[in-house]
Image 1 (spheres, rainbow, N blue to C red):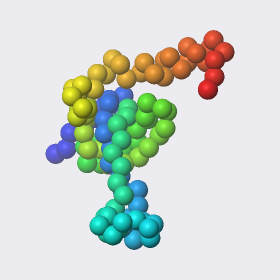
Image 2: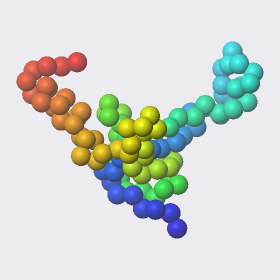
Image 3: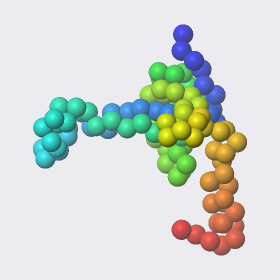
Image 4: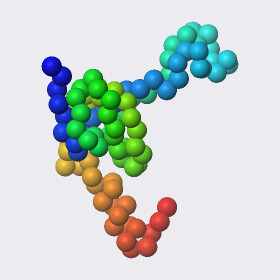
Length: 104
């Protein structure tokens, strides 16, 4: 049985962006036969099981879909696991700036 993860949890998804046959012809031969993959961290939009398709919202507001591979993923550059309380800060700051008349 796979782990059920609640909406609003910091997670990591995985997806194949391009299959080997869809890669550009100028891609080096040693990688041409491999898929182009992505791994992205973000906040889970709706609850989902690890191993199932899921939608996330990234820190920049993009919505992406992929296979849910980890909940509370660690940042491997040694800052440790994600801190749930810090996740909304970027969006909150952008909202404050928007209300004050600042825009991108």
